Length: 346
Ligand code: FA5
Ligand code: MG
Image 1 (cartoon, rainbow, N blue to C red):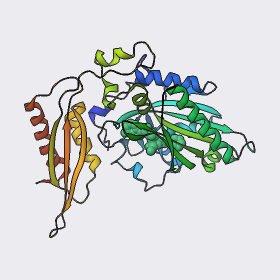
Image 2: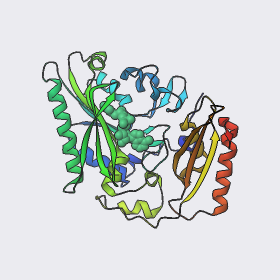
Image 3: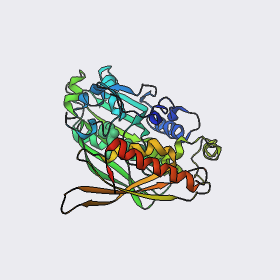
Image 4: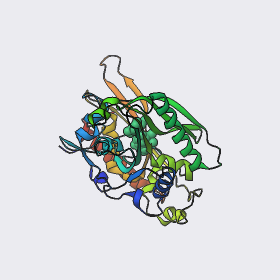
C-alpha cells in the first residue's frame, strides 16, 4: 500500500526548518519577521489525509498530483503532505485570519540541483471579512507583500524577479514568482486569491483572502548562493558551520569532486512513469546521485516500442567517488530497473 522508500521515511522528523542556525531556519525566521502579525504554525505533522491534501483544496479526482507516481501514500487515505496548503482548511475553520505554516513536504519528482523528494514550504494566508475588499485589492495586497518580502530578504542585492500566470485548483487568479538564478529562471513560489467555495466550506462565507506557498530551499539557495539542494541535508561541518553567525552569508563551496556520468537505455513497458525510475535511482544511490536527465527518446518504426535513454550523473558532495563504487551502483540500477519496472535493457 505504502510507496514511501526507507530513504525518505528516514528524513521524516528531521525538521530542518526548526534546527537552530540551519539555513532553512535562518530563512524561516526572516520570513516570520516580515509577517509580524501572522500566527506561526511550525509543528503540524506531515502525515495528512487525502481529504486535507487534495479534496478540500478542489483538486480534481483525476489530477496528476494525486497519483502514486507523484505522491507518497502511507495508506489509501493518508499521504505525506505534498504542500503546506494541506493545512489551509483546518486553520481557516479555526477562524485564523493571518497565519504562516512552516513544514516539510514530500514529492516524487525529478532529480536535479533544485528538486529533492523532501523539501520545505511556508504557507501564508490572509483573509478579510465579508464586503471589505474586492479581488483586485486582494491580489494587489498579495503582490505587494511578496515583493516586499523578497526586497527585505535580499536587502540591497540586485534581484531580477518576474510574475508568471499559473493554475492551482484552490486559488483564482493564480501566479508564480520566479527569480534569476545561475543564468536561469527559478520558481520560488505559487500564490493566488483563495477560491470562494473553500472559504465558504470553512464557515467563512462571503470573505476574501490570499494564500501563498514558498519553497524555503529555493529562497535559501538564492540568498546564500547554495548550489545544490542536497547540501541542506549535509551534516558535514564544512557546510553547517558556515551559517553559525545566523547572518546572510555567501556560501563558499568546498571543492567540487569529479562527476561520473553513466548512460542507461531501455525499452519501456506500457505503464511506465519516469518518476518510478527516478525513485529507484535515489533508492540505490541516495545522495551520490546529482542529476538524472532523459537524454533520448526513440520509437521503433516497426514495432512501435518506445525506448528511453537517461544520463545519470553520480557525484558526492563530500568526497571523490571510486570507479568501482560507481560501477556497482550503476550495475544495481541496471538490475533493479529490469526486476522492478519490467523494462528491457538495450
Ligand atoms: C504549491 O505547492 C502550492 N501549494 C502553492 C500555493 C499555495 C499556491 C497557496 C497558491 C496558494 P508548487 O507545486 O508550485 O505549488 O510548489 C511551490 C513551491 O515549492 C515551488 O515554487 C518550489 O519553490 C517548491 N518546490 C516544489 N517542489 C519542490 C521540490 N521537489 N524540491 C524543492 N522545492 C520544491
Ligand atoms: Mg509550481
